[in-house]
Image (cartoon, rainbow, N blue to C red; front, side, top):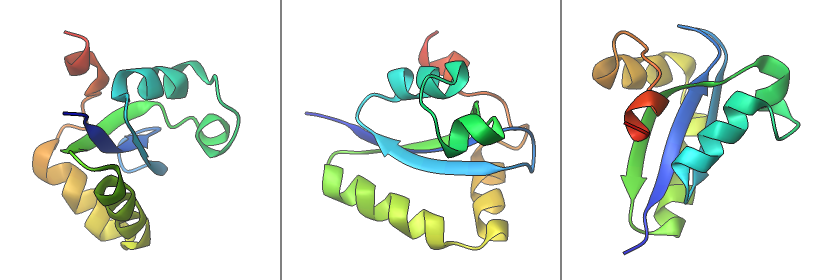
Length: 96
């Protein structure tokens, strides 16, 4: 069954955040890290994968992405800190 991901990348701890969704998390984070796609992420250097969640339905992943983008900053930081208090780059775990 296909998986879809909602993710948050940051440029540093408590720094600029980018929220997105994709069906290929490894590829998408590689694009963030390499600056392959012009736009917000490249401009602000949001390359560190600090949070992600998996969804089985693309519609639900898109809805969750839109919902998270509307959250206030504190809620987003709390979400990251709950599962990743050290703000480790989780991309390394994906490819281990």
